Image: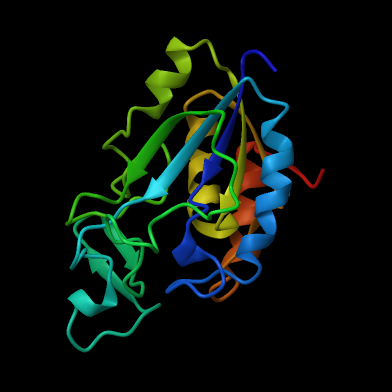
Amino acid sequence: MAGSALIIIDVQNDFCPGGSLAVAGGDEVVPVINGLSQHFEHVLLTQDWHPHHHSSFASSHPGRQPFETVRMAYGEQTLWPDHCIQGSGGAAFHPGLNRTKAELIIRKGFRPAIDSYSAFFENDHSTPTGLAGYLRERGIRDITLVGLATDFCVAYSALDAVAQGFATMVRLDACRAIDLGGSLDAMLGRMRQAGVTLASN
């Protein structure tokens, strides 16, 4: 589909079963995404890429536990188990993911003091990744988002995409969620309200 892009969010080993921040059924998205990739002219990937001792890791905050929330300079931040450390096996893409057509990999979360859920902006919502400019220069106006996890990196990417003027769809059958304290329903609601198209096939 010319003028359209498939953006595959964080299909990495640490987010799949056996990983340090495993999303239930995370590996189930791989065959669905591989099938979808064949129908898009443009395929892009994002990759969570944290340094050791990243500020979003609970291990960087003595006395804090994973999934607690702390206040950072840029706002609230969920603390995570150490995951997707640069160059580690956990940060690698799932081995079954077909990346042959991928024309760009956006790495995010590599700045030690700030996390990055969205493919478009760091969690301060103002530091860009450069993805929006890349898409515009390629003449891409419609994007479909898939990957992990529905209620965090996929959802925040979708919200930013709409705000940047892209027609945005999330294929829920090619995503899986963490669902922390109702986060899935909350983010599905936010996406619908923002104008994201939610589809299952």
